[in-house]
Image (tube, rainbow, N blue to C red; front, side, top):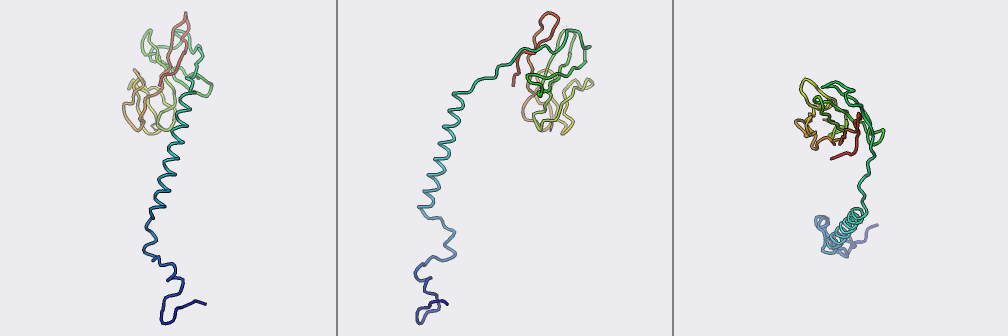
Length: 167
Ligand code: FES
């Protein structure tokens, strides 16, 4: 049953709440202020969280790990190893008689394993044809936006030791 005022075709409730349907999509000043205050509060709390994390952030401490014997692989040869944990797969390449480079094998685009192309002298990702420089791991081509993390190597006696991950 709808209550109508005498002589009116409009229901009584419409007279008491005179907001038209077309006007309902407009945001009131109070709603906008509430939205802005809550959004600002959320951003403030987020920034405080980032600040606290950066204050208490500790750079990872890498262990020293032998990865190969000097001369173990031929010039242009490759050896796979894991560093710093057994789940972090890396690739060691002997680029010259006494020159070795090591990189994370995980492509910086979508984590496919990169491999060394001796013919092109670069690291290649087969998934989306991302190519990386053998000199510094920089992106040469393809969708990756960041260079490959480099494994810092040190010769100790007859051993090649991984000491740090850069990038
Ligand atoms: S995962 Fe390597 S290029 Fe996409």
